[in-house]
Length: 117
Ligand code: AMP
Image 1 (cartoon, rainbow, N blue to C red):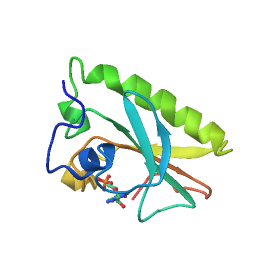
Image 2: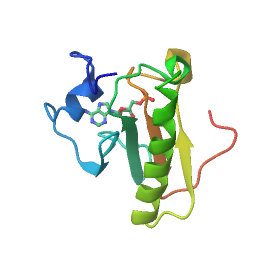
Image 3: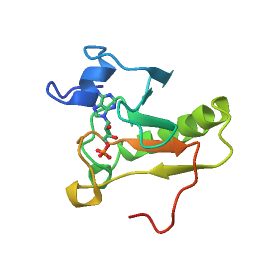
Image 4: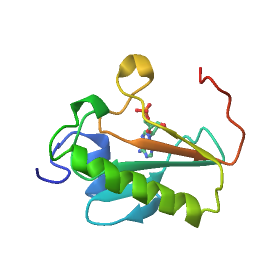
């Protein structure tokens, strides 16, 4: 796997710092940045630096990237003093996925309905 290998992928371009983003967390495997059109007072996207188009494509080595993403997300939530928040992965267009680089939405700072719309 080569990190951020997809030349045209928006989030790979953010990983490569070709497109600016407000970075919330970064280590060798994970990048997190604030959503450009937030759906809650706090809305951070957590991504593996390696390009994986969607959750259902994650297998083998890719699957091992999910744990670090979740751990990073909990650290970010703690750093932002969120003690209640929603974590969302949209997998596929019908589920609402618009950027095809696997990402976790960390949403907080307001109440959330259940079930989601
Ligand atoms: P999804 O619809 O689950 O694929 O989520 C994609 C998210 O990426 C949306 O919430 C967008 O607002 C967000 N987004 C798109 N472009 C950017 C960008 N350049 N910087 C930060 N967030 C972005």
